[in-house]
Length: 435
View 1 (tube, rainbow, N blue to C red):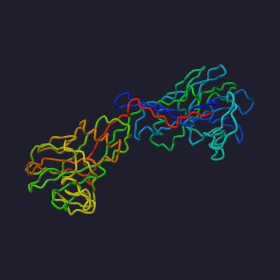
View 2: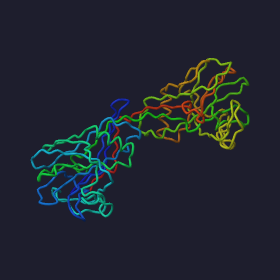
View 3: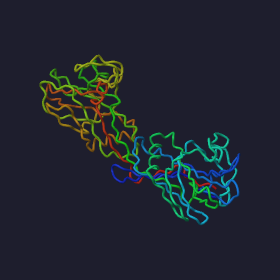
View 4: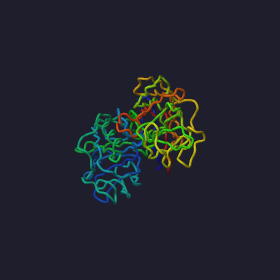
């Protein structure tokens, strides 16, 4: 027979906060009541639920599992709908219940002939009535291991497409997103008391209508501290740094020697197809000098990688250690900036005003700042962070901020990013036609 196999994922953004994922089944199968070595239908076009007219070994249970790895960890699942299509039945309405499966199971190469209701000899790795994997792990209970509580229930009546939805179904998916190793899918159980109540549903190998899981979810807001930070102290020899210090400095102190901060954030947890909808960076001021004035801080996209080592000092810094960033070094004392004071874009990615009373500075997230983050999630090799520049005109108008190493976690630099997944983006993996 001709079958089409594959995974089709489609993302549709409803708004900047919520996304919808349409997900084809990752695997499916039927548990046919039978003794070892057992029957199965892993590669068949259909799966079955309920009880046939057979005098014995008449029970059928369907298995479905969906790969949820496209949903970012930390997402909130808002709603879930499971869609399956009935393609054969015996003329009576029946209630079908979904239960969460409690151990992994297999889909092998077994492919029953005809209407497939009788199954065929299980192949290696197939789920059967007695085994989660034929030739391997056994079920603890004949007919599969699953939660006693019903995740969703629906009355089916005739040849049509059915949609299962419930708070418990949503809770199942939320749990699987939070704990992916617990995702073993659902078992579908019908009327097992009355003969002739079995329903046949189209499996993922069916070319007409396949099982589909629709997941409405809100991607997480990423709240993160720097992966590293440092201060570039203006010196001719790069002898001063502050890689392990609890403060970052910017501006120009009374001695006239400039300080610039450098910060880098790990944003690799954001999918590279995401659209950044907002971003802000908050810095906590730790010291305001007596000569403080109003000013403007600016963030500039850093163009080269730089280091954070063990130097730790106050506003005057400390002796540079190997691989510290300094005024002239990206990595002390072997690798140099192209320009003393750091390599960065001359046009600021974002700015924030401050005065002589400001206890914090917040960069609100300009289009340019968002563009920087977008570049980083698309290629982490481009992520060198930002260079923080303060008032470099007026002596004494320097500021210090809590760094990554500050003892008070709430005071550390905090980057907040919200995002959604790209509109109408479709992935097709391993889509092939088999003879």
